[in-house]
Length: 190
Image (tube, rainbow, N blue to C red; front, side, top):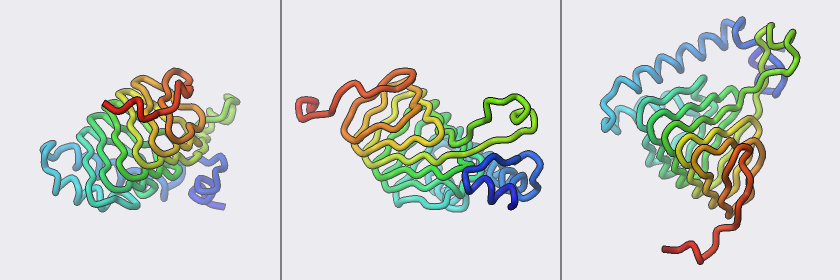
């Protein structure tokens, strides 16, 4: 089994010693660098690069630079996707965003995790678990989403939260670790 096959199966793998994975990361980092050098309002230029980089993009997508990812092709975004400055998506595993997703500045989506045992970490072993985000989700500034998390539809995640486990649809969640505070209701309409 290749390191890439191990990665895609959710097993421990070594990305740092595999020429195929190193080449894929290098290509993605080069595209991210090109993306980050464009003027912030060059939406057509940004879209052209994201079309090469991501596995799937919707019609309306806007990510303010700087933006970084690992592979790119494991990222899928729906319609009306917006991410503010400084978003990082470490996509060794799939990261799927639904429609109408808003991401505040400095957020991170991290599919990669590392073993607890030092001898495994010292061999640069890593694993990935996918992240799935539903429709109509808003992430406040500085939110960090960890491996294996699924977030339902119509969710607001408060600034600074660290999302370590799944969040159900229709809620406001906050904290470290992030916990559901309450449901979103019609009483929240301004």
